[in-house]
Image: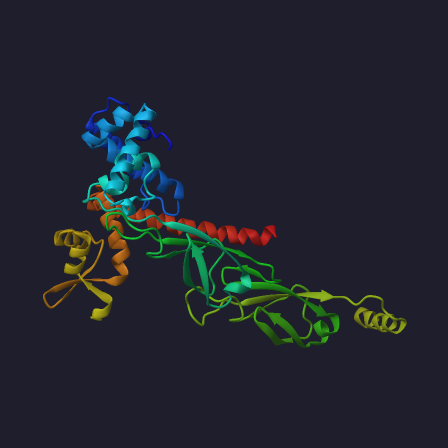
Amino acid sequence: MARIDYYKLLGVDKNASESDIKKAYRKLARKYHPDLNPNNPEAEKKFKEINEANEVLSDPENRKKYDQHGDDWKHADEFEKARQRQAQQQGQRGQQQASGDYSDFFESMFGGGSRRSDSVRFRGQDYNAELQLELKDVFTTHKRTLTVNGKNIRLTIPAGVKNGQVIKIKGQGGEGLNNGPKGDLYIHFSIENHSKFKLDRDNLYTTVDLDLYVAVLGGEITVDTFDGKVKLTVKPETQNGTKVKLKGKGFPVYKEEGKFGDLYITYNLVIPTQLTEKERELFNELSKLRAL
Amino acid sequence: MNSEKFIPLQALCTHYEVETSFFTLLDEYGLIEIQTHGEALYIHQDRISDVEKMIRLHRELDLNFEGIDTVLHLLDKIAELQKELTATKNRLRLYED
């Protein structure tokens, strides 16, 4: 059982007045409130700690008890044993009320959440989870089962979700206190790209090797897109580094069904190597023609 | 009005244990939009999570309506900046790979 210094948590001394405690609590609550610190588990933890401290120190009876037992571990332990005996005699009534939101110390001193004022309803804890996916996984909308805090949650992963994006699943967090609403589940997406395509916003970028003769004379080539192959007409006299846009062949736009970004292809001209005598001769002829 | 998408204000007052005046003041401050149908008042279901947040800010932090409005604006701004930061990081990855 960890000793928690509630006065230290609130930043007040042991002789602080009720109004000092209230003032200190309010200031810290504004700083660490989960709504003001979205996706910040540290702030949420701190908020719970200062709430616990305020629960005890703002109630004169609880504060007295805390002051009495605070520096003496043995008394606190004896109190805990007495409380356990009492609970057993009452058929372990109320054990279900013990909540993970309180420290062990608080529960042993004040009996879990049962001492908390009924009028204060607290929203449940927000859970955070990270989901690692491949880029190809988020090309189409699909369902996936996640296990969060031992609970299986069936999720629809929308196509086009981006690396670093956070999706909130309402009501899938921790249980609320005193009939407070459930917390939410925040899923952080970590998306790795091992494909030959680069993604920028909803557009895909890739480089395609282009045969010299097709580049000079024009022709038809087959290129890979993210979800298959397409035939592409190459204009005669295409230069190295030329970019072409394939409209609608990019990545799906998040939450806009049927809408896609574009695919940008950059041609990389490939010069033939290991020329035969005949080829060299013909290139020389071409060169002479150009010189005329 | 599509009644399936609107929640009666009275039901919300009971569920969240708040006075009707709380919602009417939120409406007056432009924080929510109350719809009237006949004599009953309604709120669109899409606004419920915001309403819950406003109730929490009011109850747990003693924020008045001007305070709630300011906080929500700043949170929107933070979310927008966070989005931009993520997009920028993703673009930076293109050059780092």
